[in-house]
Length: 244
Image (cartoon, rainbow, N blue to C red; front, side, top):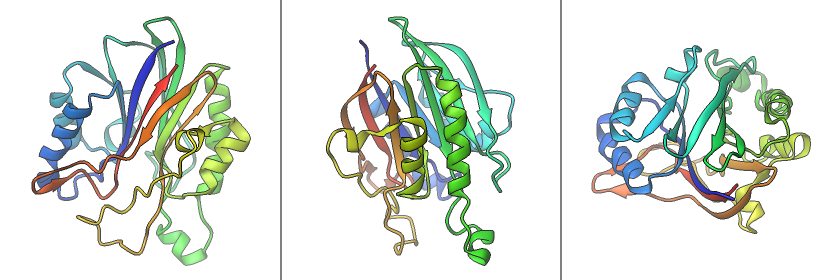
C-alpha cells in the first residue's frame, strides 16, 4: 500500500495573475503534493507551473483543453503513465470535459486520476432558461469513468460548480465517495475566496475530491493558503492524503 497526496485547485485563468503568481508558486512548492489537478489553466499559468515543478511531469494530450482548461501534474519518480485522454461531455465550453490519466504506482498498482470543471450556474443559457447543464454532464462523466476505471482504484476531482448533484450522481452511478464524507467530515466551503471575488452571494462547497475502490482517505482539508499581499484564486484548494 502506498500513501499519496493530491491537491485540486481552480486557477481562475489569468484573472489578477500578476497579483497571484508568487502565491501559487509558493503554494505548490510548500505542499509538494504527489499529484496536482488544476482547472482553468492557460498557457501563461502553465509556463509558471512548469518552472515551479521541475520534478513533475505535466500530463498533456492532443486536445487543446490540456492547455486552456485542465491539467494534471504527477511526480515523475512515483508514477509511470499507462494512458491518458479526454472525455467530451457536450458542454457549452467546447474544450472542457473529463481529463484523465491512468498511472502505475511504484508498487505496481494501477490508478485512474481524472479532473473536470463543470459548467457554471451563471452560464448565459442557464440564466435564460433555468435549465442547468451539470446533471447531464455528471451522468455522462459517470458512465465514462465506470469504463475507464476498469475495476482499478480511481480518484476524480475538480470544480463541480454544484455542491449536491454531481457528487450524488458520481456516488450513485459510479460508486465514488467524497473524501470528506468518508472521514466523517462536512465538506468545507471552497468558493468564494473573499479576498479577490466579488461573488460573495455564492457560498458553496463545490471543489471536490472523490475516490472509489481500494483507496482509504487519511486526511482531507481545504488549506486557506496565503502569502503577504496574495492569495491563490477566487477558489480555495482541496487536498487529501490517500492510501492506495
